[in-house]
Length: 94
Image (cartoon, rainbow, N blue to C red):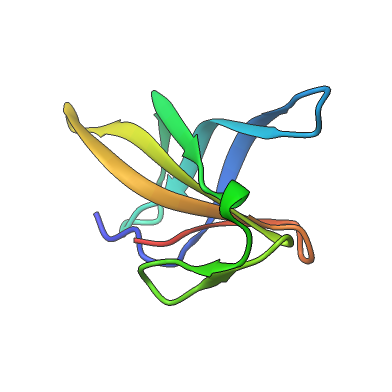
């Protein structure tokens, strides 16, 4: 599956402290069907201030990046997703 730079659906939890916890993601595959994945573990990467992600995206206070561990066809995979507060869209970045 090619996940690169797709807009995705995310079910998330907002804590009373204002933090976001991604719980489940849904991605449209090459055939146009939606595939759902539970987030087994995540790491909030937004606490480091302004920085550049490995794919060249600059993360600021308006872009909240997360590294998420999901299971794809029985194998664990780490993916990077980010939430843009300006346009309220979740994206997947390879």
